[in-house]
Image (cartoon, rainbow, N blue to C red; front, top):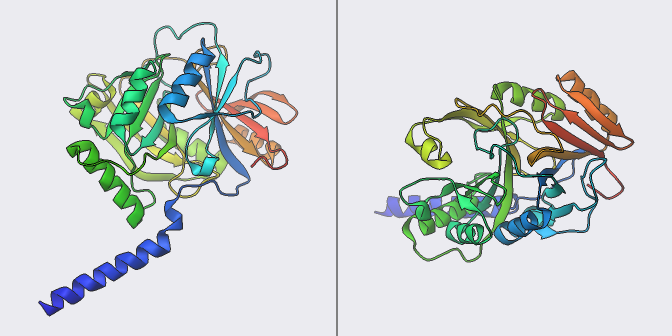
Length: 336
C-alpha cells in the first residue's frame, strides 16, 4: 500500500512539473518567422453574406487591414481575422465572384477543398452555423454528439469543425481534449468557455506526397502527425460521400508555435475532377504568405515545379504543381 501511495505521489508530482514547464507552450501563438502563412482568399457572389457567416459561426473579426484582393478585383472585398493565436491568426479575404460554383463544391474536389476550425463546444458552433445559413454534410447517426463534422457555408464551400486535439501534447492540451470529448459525447457539463481557432486549409490533389514535397522545398517545413489512411464507414459518414477513401498528411505552416495552422494534403479515391480555380471562380481560390524575401520565395516556387503568374512590386501570385494559386506579399514594416 505504501509503495502504491509513493508511486501515485511520484506520478502526480511529475504531471504537475510537466504541466508547469509546458504551460506556455500549450498556448498556440504567432512566432517570429521570415515567412508567415497569413491568408486564405475566398471568392463569393455575396461578400457580405459570407462575411456575416464566418463572423457569426467562428467569431472571425472584420478588420481594417490591407486586402489580398488581386489586381483588377473591385474594392468590395472584406478582410476577416480568424480566431486564435493571440489575435494574430490568418485572415480570410472575401472577394466578389460573378456567381456560385457550378457544379456545387464537394469535399473531394481537387484544390483547396475545405477550411477547418477547432471548437470546445461542437453543439454551439453547429447551432450557429445552421442559423447563419450553413448546413451539415456529415451523416452520422448522432451528428449532435460527433466530435468532428463536415458542413457547408452558405456558398456550399466545405467546412470542417472538430474538438481540440492535443497538439502539442501537454497536460493542458490533453485535459482540454478530454473535457471537450466528454461534453460532446456524453453531454455532461460544458466547457468553461469556448475556444475557437483556425486549424487548416485542405489541399486535395492526385498525389498528396508531391504536395508535401513541394511545401517542404518552398517553405522548409515538415509533414507532421501520422499519415492519414481513411476508408470505410467513418470517412463516408463524415464527408457524406459514399465509397470514399482518403490518404494524406498535414504540413506545418510557418509563423506559428507547435500545433499551429497546417495545410492538409489529401488524395481522394473519388476526386470530382474540378480544375484549379482562378480569382474569377467562386470558392477557396488561394492561400497567402507574407515574406521578408519575395525574390527568394519565388525562386523556390520555380525550383519546386511551380510557376509565377503575376508580379507587381511586392505582390506576387504563383501556382503550385497542380495549378492552385499561392499569393505572396513582401512584408511591410511591422506587418509580421
